[in-house]
Each structure stands twice: as C-alpha cells, then as structure tokens.
Length: 365
Image 1 (tube, one colour):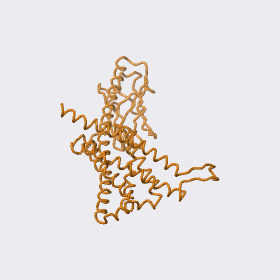
Image 2 (cartoon, helix red, strand yellow; image 1 turned 60 degrees about the horizontal axis):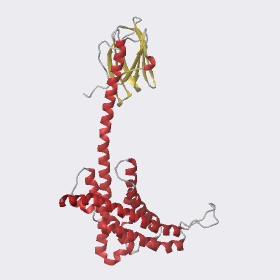
Image 3 (cartoon, helix red, strand yellow; image 1 turned 180 degrees about the vertical axis):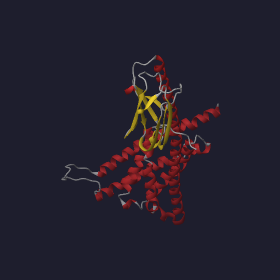
C-alpha cells in the first residue's frame, strides 16, 4: 500500500457557515460523506502530486447540519458549503488541535473577528505548511546537482568518444595508406567532426547558464574559430578537402580533446588523477600553436579559391542594395585568429601555472 495522499484544502468561515475548497482538478468518481461531526472525502484527480487518488478526513470543531450542507465540482476543484448548527465563530476547524500541512487558510473567506486562539491556530497552520513547502523545495533542489553531474559527465563522455574515434580513424588511415592518406582527411572523418563540433557549442552555453563555473571567453574563442573553419571555409569549398593541411588540422583538433575530456569527466565526479591533469595542462603546449598555424594555413589557402567562386560574396546591384566581399572577411579572420590564439594560449598558460605550478611550489617547499 502506498502513502495516502491528501490534496490542499483551503478553509474559511462566517458565523453560520464553513467553506472548504479542495484543490483538485479533473475529478473522477468523488466519494463524499458529510455527517454531523465529520467530512470524509476520496477521489481520483490531478493535485499537488499529479494524477493520483487523494483523500482526507476532518472531524469538525462543533456539530454541523449535513442536510443543509452541500458541495459542487468546478474546473478548479471542489467547493463545500458546510452549514453550522449554531451561529458561532469557531476557534479552529477541527475537533482536535491537529496541524495538517495540507489544510490552509482561505483568506478570501476568513471571518476577521476571530478569537486570539483562532488567530494563533491559523498562524501555526500556515507556519507548518511553509515548513513542509520548504522541505519539498529543498528535496527538489537536492536533485538538481545530481542531474547536472550526470548531464556533464555524459556530455564529456560523448565528446571524448567522438574525438577519440576521429583520432584513431586518422591514425589507421595514415598507417594503411601512408602519405596518400593526407588527402583523405575530410572524406574520412569530416561528418563525424562536424557532429562533435556542433555539440561543442554547448561549451559556450554551459558557463552562460551557470552549469559550470568557468569563463565563457576561452570556449567561445576556440569553438567559434573551429566552427568557422569547418562549417564555413572547409565545408563549402571541396577543393580544400584533399589538402594535407586539413588532415593534419583534424588530427591536431581531435588529439588535444582526447586529453581534455577525460580530465573534465573526472572533475565532474570530483576525482583527480595526476597524470591526466598533467596531460590536460601540458599537451596543449605543442598542439594549440600547431592547430592555430594549421587553421591559418587553411584560411590562406581558401582566399584565392573563394575569390574564384565568389561564394558568399554580394555584388551590386542587388535587391539588398549592399556589397560584401567574402575574401575580405577571410583576411579579417586571419587577424582575429592571431588575436584569439594569443588570448587562448595566454589563458591556458595561466591555468597551467595555477594548477601545475602550485604543485611544484609545494614540492620545492
């Protein structure tokens, strides 16, 4: 048998009546029993715990008139009109001084000439309700970190598997074909790389949403630069697909991630392996500058090709009445690549100094 669920019940009174409002929608087959001393309710409906069966029982403070009492079902709940036998303001609704967390005050129907005892009961009842609400909110909040940890771990695992596949595929291709493989980089892993790089946009979103407590600048520079090279420059110019520089660029991009994502997975779980940490903050030293050099090489190779095809270029006259020369953007991209690359390398150096440099100082001390 599961735990009995009770809906929220709001009550108020006048000198001759008690009003009850049961917060339960989509009521199915309600069972109501009103006697001189009590009210028993049971029904299927949509309440605070979703679609469930709800019930409650109330022993009234004083006898009521069941013949004159009635109820009606509305779209927002069930409303009870309980007729008192005598014209008297009750100090509380129930016979016993029991504080029900689901029983709340309907301030729209409160009789304001209450006794001090009634006022204290109302306040105590509200305090009890607030305590339960705070407890429920805390339980919900406690589930959020678990969800965040699970999400970040699965995200990093997905990226690690994806980039590892790309790295291994390129190594196998080069092992089998030798230098001829250098012309097959895009053909071999172009689609897979576009998938993981599209997903990598989330690394800009994570810090912006507060999912991770790091700056969004470094991932913005890295992800934006890579995706511009991949989705704009390379994807739309097939003559670049067979360039050996593209094969090398793809290998460098994926190789660095094979060290980065295991570190992130361990960090998500609150664990740390010294060798993995060292690789994360050391492997970038040769690979990041090499990647920037190769991105610049691909950008330089693309300029005459896009001058030839005039793709993405707008010439006057046109309906927009504006001109745009895409090769100029490629020139600007090369300068931005140098600036962004410098910022990224400087950031990684400061992070390495903070993480690994501190460890060395401790050893020397």
